[in-house]
Length: 396
Ligand code: FAD
Ligand code: GLY
Image 1 (spheres, protein in one colour):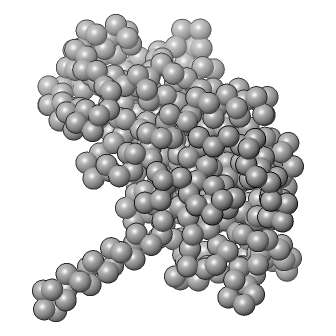
Image 2 (cartoon, protein in one colour):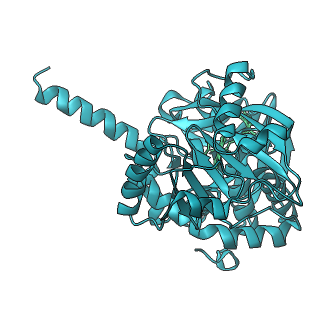
């Protein structure tokens, strides 16, 4: 990891960032620490986009699915960075991030579920992930409120969690303490171009000059019509409904992050129990549906029946910023002076430290760390060329 105290200061560098979510604020904090003049713009309140809607799982291990091997490398770097990142940010902001390291349990309530879980366990272990197989009794020793008869479980000691809302607040405080300027309630409406290069941005009638503009607009990143088509990242919103139940913090029903078929549950230290999340292709539809909430409660009740006595504290819907291959888009765009940091889909909280490191590295030193280099926008152009080549080869 870069030692930020040693980053060479370049007083001439001014950076404008579109979006004050975990990505925009993390990058902004690192750049402000390094002595850049940084302004962040958010059309709403900082941290109230996807970052606010998330569950805060740092689940590099148990969320890995076939086809995500390339992303796993980046996720694991981020997971390793998290404990130091959390400590540094807590010291800089004076806030507790609610970082919890009990680990994650994935439970299989039935024998069929256990067969399926065994398949992902073998696949994930084959990728070198450290996971342990538990029988039902062992799982219940860890979490006594689990339903009797659990057929099997997987324990991942290294998949931790953080309170994502505290994280956003802490980044905002640390960024401002490092000298950064935050414009909340200011929508960016255009790029300022001069001789084919980005020279700043427009917020209505107001121009803000910058050497570099970073697009970190989360799920909105692909829908900004003022970004030229060639530089616009292929990102769409994928809706997730969630809810929070109230546990007794002195006697919580759950201590680990828990996954079961179609559900995850995330216990916070203050007694909140987050239950998530649906995965829906509904554009920016914010509605909460009876079907969505029913599905969540039913799937949560199966492994943990005692939730039926808990009060419902909160319900919400948010949008994952999802790219065409579910991996983030990090690095330069075809427009000189415009950098992309978006498309983090289900892993934006996990990837916060590595995203900040990669984009700050690019702006300060002209290159990203090696683990981030495979995630530039031009990988999609390569896909298109490969399809063209196959079509030519097939004589079409
Ligand atoms: P955002 O947080 O959305 O920030 C983008 C900001 O840009 C917004 O604040 C928005 O107002 C602003 N903006 C947009 N357009 C403009 C404009 N024109 N001008 C100015 N500002 C603009 N990830 C995990 O790692 N772990 C999890 O457990 C997890 N759970 C999730 C659960 C759900 C239900 C959802 C929806 C997501 C979850 N995620 C999780 C994913 C994670 O939330 C995102 O990947 C991450 O928050 C993306 O951060 P961001 O900064 O890119 O986007
Ligand atoms: N990573 C959890 C979610 O996106 O729902």
